[in-house]
Image (tube, rainbow, N blue to C red; front, side, top):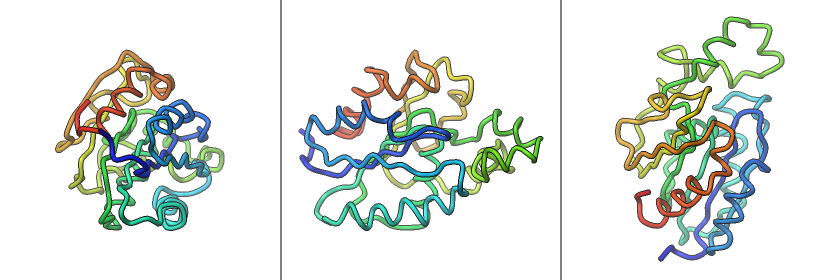
Length: 201
């Protein structure tokens, strides 16, 4: 049985909004979680600034009860924001983290777009930080010391299943989705609930 009324903070992906996480939000609310479906300007700031100036303040304001766990469910770049945030701050009431299609080892799309610097004015500073190898921020982040479950999409053209993985992830699942449809996938949503509840998909 889940700890009723624990917090779950949802972070959407690059160029998306909280609407893309609405189906997951509703499913979690229905079983008693206190859900915070977080909107942030993915094109406007670096990953560090999104974590420090947006996510940190959100948690301070909207997760005040220290007796409740704070879980995270993320899509795509949202997972990297949470990884950076948790590398900088210790949450004593941290729960579990589920990442949907996260570019934990970078994205080839980011590599390609980084070849055209003029695109940064359109796409913002965060996208180049998602490059593969040591060109991206993801490679500078420590391995998580908390429970992480990762769900990758089999038909993802933006983030490969290998790129989604982390060394010490607690569980890993591949669904027959795309990078976009994974957030509305019944399989991914039920698996997310399972992981928050038990630590496995």
